[in-house]
Image (cartoon, rainbow, N blue to C red):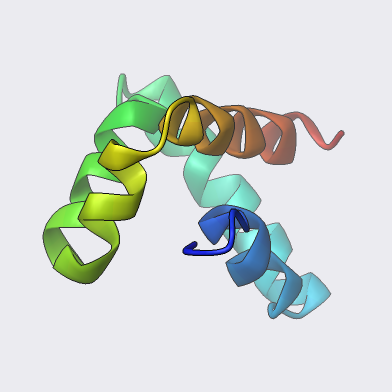
Length: 76
């Protein structure tokens, strides 16, 4: 995250295809239930406070991560 890398992208690159399929399904379900990508990133920042300054301090970083999540769910 410090070097401008995507937290979401970095995490997903380390996952197996089976894990990605599970996360995609689970994320789709959460979105259908009304959980927003912003809510998910806020929870990540709460659980990993060392990421919070990067996520909130860099212009457009959080929006870029939200876009990554949306693209992942759509399969783009």
